[in-house]
Amino acid sequence: MFAILKNEGEPKSFSAGDVVFTDGDLSNGYMYTVLDGEIELLKQGSVLETVGVGGVFGEMAILDHEPRSATAIAKTTCRLAAISEARFKALVAEHPKFALGMLKLLTERLRRTTFG
Image (cartoon, rainbow, N blue to C red; front, side):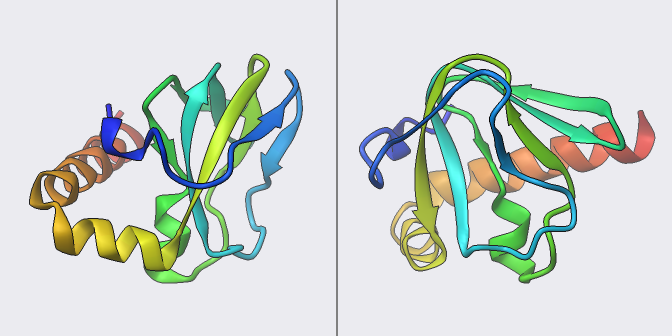
């Protein structure tokens, strides 16, 4: 989805079942893009979304500095790239299509979680 992110950050590997972050955790200042594998986003034990290669998650916490709103768990063995808040802001400023893509993603997630 966000090919611009494929060369960002230092890739970090996770095994199936590893927790990336937990609902309520304080933000560490990063969002993530999936380089390989799949991540499940859960709220109160229910899967909200499965994020695959090229997808992103964790963006809300770097936008509003509030605690994480879901739990992210590796569904499969995966590699993630962490995108810092500063880098995210630079990408938004430099690449309008990236900014619009992020707005679209946030809107889709909001509609899915609010309106079913």
